[in-house]
Every structure is written in C-alpha cells, then in structure tokens.
Image 1 (cartoon, rainbow, N blue to C red):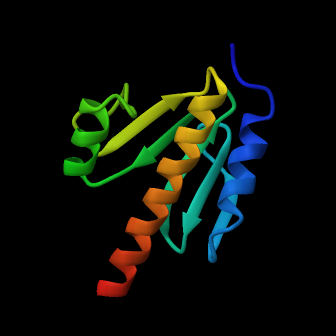
Image 2 (image 1 turned 60 degrees about the vertical axis):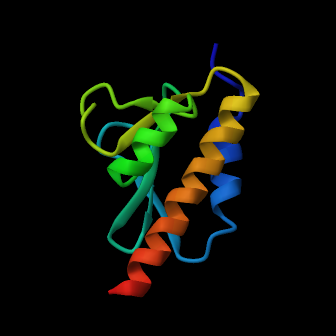
Image 3 (image 1 turned 120 degrees about the horizontal axis):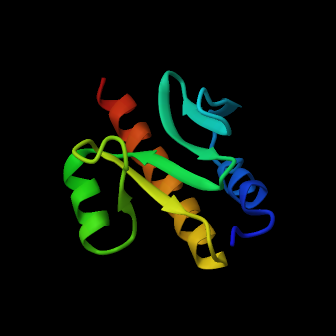
Length: 109
C-alpha cells in the first residue's frame, strides 16, 4: 500500500536544494532536474527512479537500499517502491545524494 503524502514529502525534501526544478515526467509523475541533468523522478504509482553512476548503483542494490531498474537493469538507474514511511525517507536521501553527485559533476566541468 503506497504511503499517503509520499510525493509531497519528497518534494519538500528537494526544495532545500538550490537550483532543482520540477516538471512533468514523460512517463507520468514529477521529474527533478539540476540544469539539464535529471536527479530522479517520482511516478504516480508511487515509485521513485534515480540515476547514479553504475558503481554507486551496484553498492545501493547490493546493500538493499534500492532495486535495479526494471527496464534498464544494467544501467545506473535504481528504483524504490514507496510502500512504507521508511521507503519515503530512503528515497528522499537517495535523491539528495543524486543531487550532490550532480553538483560535483557540474563543478568539474
């Protein structure tokens, strides 16, 4: 059973990050970006998809913090089903981690 208010709680967590914008996602839901880079998106299911470098994705999946993406299992994308409050917290933390990585990448360019 999805967590009531999960999408709003995630949105509130990401509002603390300077430069993040929200827009409609092409596969339903809300996409969060830092410039041209996607930080992740929340589907209306609700479930969250987040891109990471593959090495980080491997650690997140191996430690059970996220699942491999169902369509792109060999990519850096992970997903989190929002079935309980702890899932929402974990998704928010990982979206913020994706934001931190995006900031570091933008500083090295």
